[in-house]
Structure formats: structure tokens, C-alpha cells
Image 1 (tube, rainbow, N blue to C red):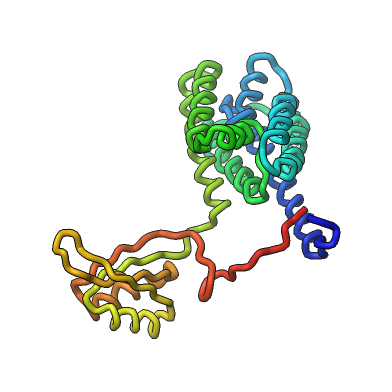
Image 2: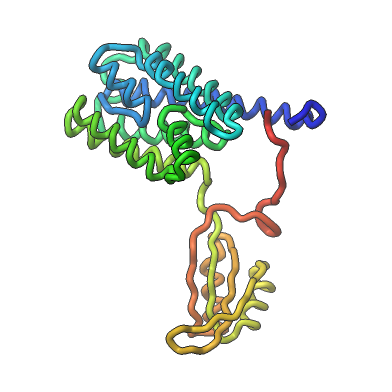
Length: 298
């Protein structure tokens, strides 16, 4: 990006992006300080290692996170293509996250917000997942195992999901050694809930459905969908491998509220039609969200 391409919209987008990163870092710190660490539950990644070091050696959690992330982020800067932007944003998150954890820690008394370890696990995992999703949407991460996973994927081609499986498993096993078997089980719940909450924030609620319709009346069905549901339809010819007969397959994207209307409409025209309803997250194009490229934040 050159100075000529920097616009008012770009600057505003950059400001909003970093505000989002700050809020996410504070939410992540709150999940660690008020819910997880007081209940002896390990967060994910480097935060979990720092929390366990705090239990064993009484070292500050935030400082531990910051110290462990410095070499990792340096490797990310050196090894990842275009890594400077991701590293810059991630450093903002890591620094605020680490400092906020150590500043918030003196505010906590006893077991945190609740004496119930399960409640701490649930709210800590969900809040941490929300903060993680906000950070990922902004093109950053909390450093640690996320950056390591990106480096390994870039260098070796190993899927990030596999790398996270290994790192999360290692954290859970260490949590079992430090906090006992029950602590390891709670750490597994944190990993699961955090992943679900993070995916929800990144992808949003599932508000659309996709339908594949195999029918003997393709013209009538597609015309009805277009005129009554006001949705576009795509069709192609296919062959049933069992019968060897040619059939027309229709594909349509609809809103969640139109599923019953589509089913009733198709069944009224072709009672023997075959319909498969799939779940989608977002659709871009006419009738749905506008497909446009926003100005890239700095």
C-alpha cells in the first residue's frame, strides 16, 4: 500500500480494526484472570503454559506469555510471507493481553467470579473463544501456538487443524500433570468451547440454506422458485448411477426461513422429487450480501 492509496476510509478502517484488537485482548485477559487461572484450569496455547508456570513457580502469567511470544513472533516475521502485517497486529494484541492479565490479577479474590469450577470453565472457554474469533477476523492472532502453526503449515504443508490437535493435546496432558485428571478434563472443555465460540464469531450465525433438488419437473419447479421465493436457480444434467436415467439437478440458495416454503412448493409440483438441504453461513451476490472489496486497513 502506497501513500497515494491511503484514503479516509482506509484510515477509519485501520482505527476500527485496532479498537477491535484492543477489545479482544481485554476480553481474552478477562477470561484468563477471572475464570480460568483462579480455578486451576489451563487456557489454550502459550497462555496455558504461562498459567501452569504460575502455579508451579508463581511467575506472573502475563509476563510469561509476553516472554514466550517474543521469539515466536520474530520467527513469524522472518518465515511467513507478508508476515510483518500479521506480526504487527498480533504484537498489539499480545502486549495488551499480557499487560492486562497482570494488571487485572490483583483484582481477583479466591476462585474468581464463581466457586463453581464448571461455570468458570464454561464462561472462560466461551469468552476466550469470542476474543480469539475477534482477533482472527482482524487478521491477527494471540501468538504462541497460532503463529507456530502458521509457520509449520507454510514450511511443511501440514494442515493447521492437525497442528492445533497436537499442541492442544500437549497442553491438556500438561494440565493433567499440573492440575490433575479433573484439570485436564476441564482444559479439554475449554478447548472445545473456545473453538466453537471462535468459529461462530468468525463465520457468523448460519442464516442461509442451500438446496439440491433432483426432479422430473425442472422447468416447473425452477419457475415456481423464481416467481414465488424470488431466488435464482442453477440447473445441470446428471445421470443416476443405479437407474442410468438422466435427471435435472437444481441448486438454490435460500434464507433459513424459506426452507419449509421450498419443501412445500417442490412437493406440490413433484411429490417424488429428491431434496437435500444443506447449511451455509454467508452468501454474497444478488439477493444476499453485497460482494465488494473494502479498502485494506494499514
